[in-house]
Length: 391
Image 1 (cartoon, rainbow, N blue to C red):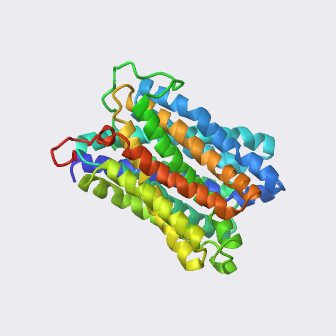
Image 2: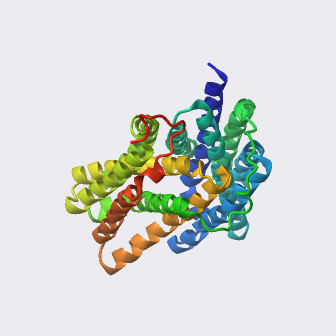
Image 3: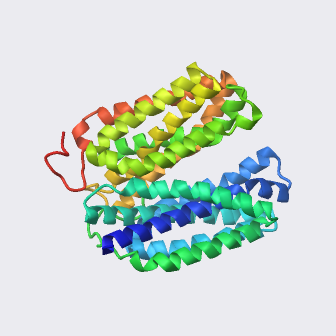
């Protein structure tokens, strides 16, 4: 195995560790609710503090990576992220857990930007698209984290004990892989600094595509079970089927995105992804049976899979900004799609019904295809240009 392959394995381990930590936190949310005797509304308010921290962390992460390099930020962020997790389980009151969740959200995006900066650097050195496979490992860690959580709950582990186990696993991963997290070549251009600026036309277009993709992703995360229960009216044992189909397809899709993007172009994959999102949600709205809705959610998962990895890959090659700052700009805008999508669905469902809400998100898929089709050549930014890649 050559040094680049070893770097790829090590970096993949870091993406897996980050996904494992996030999934482990999410697996114990019901226990956190029971611990503090929170109503659904109170829990919803508490859960807002983690994405609040994520938004705060985005410009800080872009600045830190530009200032100190992605290796330094990855190493600091990894240890801090792993060791903050048990603090969530140890917090004795809601007043104590609130700042911990804000910090955890901030560190999550520090890891997001720094790891993706490392991945883009490695992608350039390898001369081929590999970013989506790392996001696939993050998604795979979500299944692993949920499985580990179920196992530890079965054996009676408290959230704090569960999180200490995950912290120990994380530190082993960090120490084992840290030798291959390298100091990338530092950019000297002026496109750094705190990310409080207007993106250029290309980054704005990519950001809007990522925004719509994240809106669809947030819809599926938060509302797929509700849709199966209230619209599909499935058997209670099948309520999670749509969510599992979506998550499984998204994880699998990310492992094949790189090969498909190498065979065709990034823009063509994004165009097809938008069509898949539109088709999948339209099937679920027009034919709300268990079988058709499951197929529809699976198509949505395949569509969503490539949006963020390919958007990041294109953004990281901006001519005006350093990779870390470009990633933070795109991530900041796209993250609002993840935040605004689920409440928007609830609002539209309150005025009309849930099918109308899902139809609206289906239109966002068409928006992705349209945005990626306008001035197509702008998006064709291969890792190493060749006559066969420009079409």
